[in-house]
Length: 383
Image (tube, rainbow, N blue to C red; front, side, top):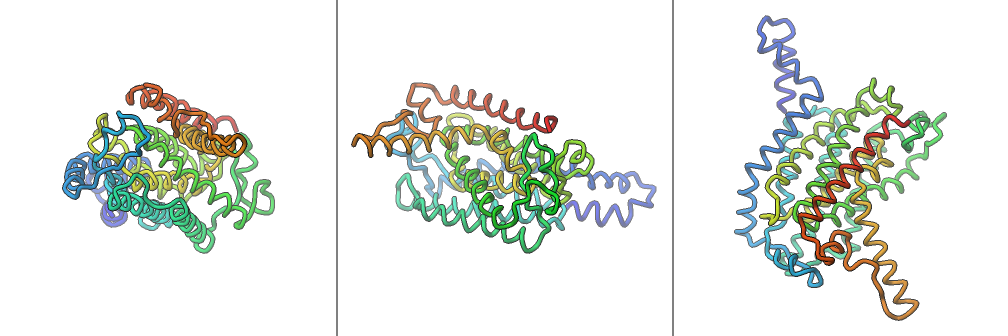
């Protein structure tokens, strides 16, 4: 909106041939990097200043978090803390993106729509928990069905309305960046790519959701991962950088680089006000939406295989759950008694049950997240 007003209307109408430095200065709004910075700051300020108001409203509505009985006493003390604070992040992201992104970018609206749909699934899950006063909301099948429908909808938009390249870009193998289906060694076609897309979107949204268990953990880790992906999104949108680094060039990616900058700002605003004890939780409405946004942008920028590097902490958290459940079922089937590898899954609860304090767990997970983010960025020069 402001991009259109300040650059498309005012600068092009008055600035190009004007002697006024004010109108000439509006030329800066054409640059993606400048608008990414503005979107980040705008989203940060919205989440900061509206945060206390949102928490107060959630308290008035008695939107309190339910806690699983098997978790530690430290965790049980959080029962009743306002949840569904993720609506603040989603709101700040949408407002900032609409203000500073180019409105003619289909990828931008697709990213916003995907984030909103994943948020709707999380909202339904949170709402059921609150109404029924239990720690579990939607059933696994209901949540999975919603995520599958969202993923298929994203694929359908790419298939019918864009010239999306149906190749798989693999780090360290620069030949896979080629998008021409007649010569690309990594072209898989729309049908096979749909299966791959389902795996990426469901994996990223659920992995972030599993990580959201301690004050500031999911917020800080996703902030780091998104900052790395914002940089990768920008270089994918710039023809010079994409050619130099041998990655799949996607000029449309510039439109939602602003979107992801807004996500980073919204997450940072929540993080600044979410130190233990957190005044509120983002809930599934926030974690599923952010995870969905992470996967969607990775797909749109052809960085799917970098997600394990970018979000290494999320992978560790998800793997801990998969290992725990698989081992429990295996031992129960073979010996009649289910056994566990971890004291509690996901992984952060294992450390919490081992006696670690929340700040210590969060701080160490943040260090690991930074290392993973640096590793993902280093792959750009290893192709």
